Length: 311
Image (cartoon, rainbow, N blue to C red):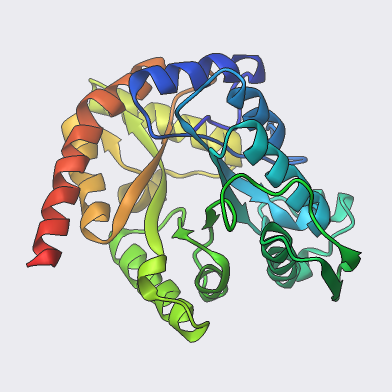
């Protein structure tokens, strides 16, 4: 994942490099307004689609309450079309920076219910329905989305968030639950909650897969790697992460980071969304270290988890 503060003119080179290195996904987050620079995920990923061929493109996450539901559906379907069916829609409700919601006409207190309604409208439009819908925040008068997304019945939906409402949202609409700032135990419990919600909505628990969105301080020198990620997080989020790092932010050498992230694999994470905790655009070294020296260890550990479950 591209760090929020990265120079946006380097995003295309980053996408190409991620594909060359063998990553499965290239992810971009977004904010309308934030403490510092931040992109728009739809625009950035559309550009990345034009310079890549294989890698999947994930919005992590689209701040869904700032968009009218039909517009979000149109943008997602267009991106899926131009990428040849490589788009995954990650969604969040925002809230870290309430003024961006208010600036877009959204009451921060309604961001959760607004997101639920938006996902209902989007999934019905993605399915090809000629939609008559009157909701609390949106009305559609017998309209159908055209063209539809390449992926049927829709692009995969990743639902972020750590609270029970996010688990319920994932159970109803999602394919992946990808929380941020949770420990392995919380990941396992939340994934179980999302799967329980899926069953309550008439779906199979197996339809919900687990992922973990993590910042990580990765380098040859463990002390330097930790210092760099804490400096980066403090600058981006205006918060001291030192008290949280031990629990939520894997740091250290490739072996140390792989060991810690392996606990998330054991807890049910089938995908790790790695964000290099490096100042500015100085992410080349950790990006290469992760794919070459951390990811293979995690893949082998995941195989062991699957084998254990199978037996």
